[in-house]
Every structure is written in C-alpha cells, then in structure tokens.
Amino acid sequence: MLVLLSILTLVGGGLILVPLGGRRGYRPASIVLGVVSLLLSSLALFVRWPTEIYPWIDFLGMRLALRVDGVSYIIALGTYLVLILVQIGVWHRRVLDSALDNGLALLMIGSLIGLYYSFDFISFFIFFEIVLLASFFLPFLHGGSARVPSLRYFVLNNIGSMTLLVAIAIFFTELGTTYFPDIYELTRAGLMSTELLTIATILVFFSFVFKAAVFPLSLWLPDYHAESPAPITAFLAGAILNAGAFGIIRYAQLIPVSEQVFLAVAAASTVSMFYGGLLAMAQSDLKRFLAYSSISQMGYIFLGVASGTQIGLIGAVIHTFSHSVGKSLLFSYSSQYSTGHIGINKLMGSAMKEFRPSMGLTVGALTLMGLPPTSGFIGEWMIFTGAFHAFPQIAAVAVFAVAVSAAYFMWLMYRVFNPEYRSEVECIPTTPYVVQTVASLVAVLFVGLFPFYFVDIIQTFGAF
Image (cartoon, rainbow, N blue to C red):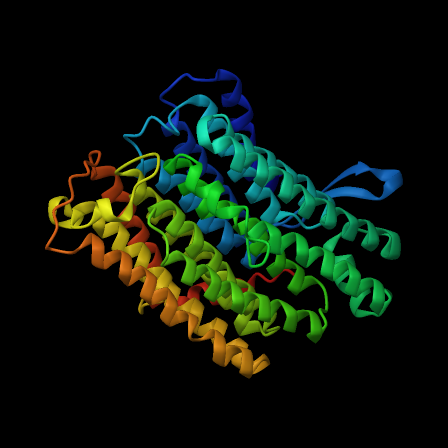
C-alpha cells in the first residue's frame, strides 16, 4: 500500500480540511503532508515497490493499478515542490491559508500525484476528473471575476474528459483491458486495428492538448489564470497543466503513435510556442503575461514528445519539471504585490525599491528562457535534439521560438530593473519568498548541472 498511502496522505488530508471551511492557519499542515507524501513516493521508487492492484468492478474488468516509475516520479517531484514552495512563498497572504483552500489544494495535488502513478486507464481517468473538480472550485469559491473563467475552464475541459473516456472505451472494447502493461504488449502485437488505434490516439491527444492549453485549444487559459487570486494561480500554473503534459508523455510511452499524428502535434506545438510568446509581449497585466507564456512553454513539451525519440521524451519530462518550478515561482512573484491584477508598468523600477522579489523573477525567467546551466536549458536542448532528428524542417522553425521566449522575458525584466523609474507598488514581507527563490534556484541548478541523475532515474526505473 506504499504508493496508495503516498496519494491518500494528500487526498485524505484534503477531505479532512475541506469541511472545516474558513478556519485559518492550515498552511503548515499542507507543507508537512506534502513532505511526507514525497518521502513515501521516493521510498516506493528506490525500493522498486511492485505495482499495486486493487480490484474494483470485476465483471467489467476494472481495477485500480498504481506504480511509481522514473518518468512519473520526476514530474511528481516538480508538483511536490509547487505544493511545498508556493505555500512558503505566499506565507503572508490570507489566500491559501484557510482550511478550505488548503483542502482543495491538497485534493488537487494529491489527485495529480495519483494520476502520475496510475498504471491503468480507469485509475488515470478517476484522478483526471478529481483534478478537474478541485481546480475548478479552488478559484471559483473565491468569487468575483474568477467565477466565469472557472466555469468556462470546467465546461471546456469536460469536453476533453469525454473524448478521453471514449478513447478508453475503445481500448477496453478492442483489447478487453485498461491495464497499461497489457495495452503496451497487445498494441505492439498488432491485436488492435490501425484505424481504431489512430482514432483513439487522436481522441486522447485532443484531450491532453486541451488540458495543457496548447494552441489551438488554449482559449480558456488566459482568463482562468488572470482572474484567479495570484497565490492560487501559482498552484494552478505550476501543477494543473502537468496533467495534460504528463498524459501525452505517458501515452507516447504506451502506444505506437503514427508519424502523421506526431507530425500534426509537432506543427501545433510550434504554432503554440510562437502564439503564446508573441501574445505575451502584447500584455500589460502580469498574470495574463505569464498565462500566455505557459501556452508557449507547453509547446516545447509537446514538441519533444512528438519527436518520437527517447531524448525528446526525456527532454519533455525535464521541461515539465522546469515549468512547474519556474512558473510557480513567477506567479508567487506576482503575489508579493497583489492577489489580483497588477500592471507591468506599475512594476517599472520595482527592483530598485525592493530587490528581493526580483530575485525570484530572475530565477523563474532565466529557467524558462532556457539559460544554461538551469534545467530549462537541458530540457530544451534535448527537446530540439529529438525534434531535429524527427522533423528537421519543423524544428528549424521552432528553434526561433527560443528567441521569442528570451525577448518577452527580457522585456519584463527590463521594466522591473529599469533604474530610471521608482515603482510605488508596495509588497508584502518577502523573506518567505526568498526561501522559495533559493530552493527553486537549487532545484533548477541541480538538474541543469547534473542532468544525468534524472536521466538515470528515468531509464533505470522504466515504466514498461
């Protein structure tokens, strides 16, 4: 029960806290539960804990299967860091301090961990839906301008959930199982028709492209992030998009995907990289700027997967980790000044007034720009290595998106560090955010300087 216990530590904690409502002071509980769950997950990985199978509906062949492998552990590690470090970084904000907020956050993060560790489609879909519900209620219950974007997010992502469910039904009807190792063997043995496999793959990719907000299915994301309270957005941006990113990574490991499907995903990913980046430069609101940059960053991950190469896939895993740490740090930066909207022009020269928050901005921006020796550089290097091997023409175009990413982040940093201005915006006490910044810097530098440790984990503790 070790893997299940690592999930129930968070989900169970969330179920206990939610009924307590608005009572405050529960942020330390979330941090402690996050650390405990991380330790249990680490133990399950390194002792090679076997797959846990729990029968559910026998006559339908449904069961819950859970296992920690290298890919799921690395992405889960980034999500654990979001849970722990965001709570520290926004320590002085009332948002995310109540029992209700912490309960929903634990439900969301715990379900994400369950999704990563799922080894059958039934477990995966159950956690996929719980993530959707928790990530809907977390901003929605704060009311105000967050409600309409939250509803739009919930409705549109339910469309993606339904397409995933149809694909699961196709696999079960054709193969008689939803267990990943069985599907891995049966599809490679040619026991599923090429036509049905292609249809199922398109449905699955549609669902994950929707969840990860890759162009052209990204319209729900900017308002959803911009209108949610900033500390909550730090959770959502650093974790929720991972459901789609991990989903496509796991599916690419599981199913032999046709070159035509990968080509379409590579093209959409490249467009997403430019679309998100160019629109980010047109924004005047910081949270909306960061939301569009997420659309661009998700394009990198999907491009790595679409390469169909091992190095591209590992690069996608590392970039997912980088995005979790870097983007949660950037949204926590926004929280130092306001839980609502904050105009970028109002931050002009803010580093000259209070330097410490700008340290976090710098670490997050340089990581997502892919500057060596951060983990962002390693991830992007591996992604483009795989992409040039598979689709050299598309990769030759996509690589220029790196310049776009550098341009929009440098555009932001130029305003924050501009010595000709003195921002009048006040920030909260920043010591907790410095702790988040230093911990995030250590994480991205460790992966950037010693990537072979992560690569060894992925290769040594393989899923199939």
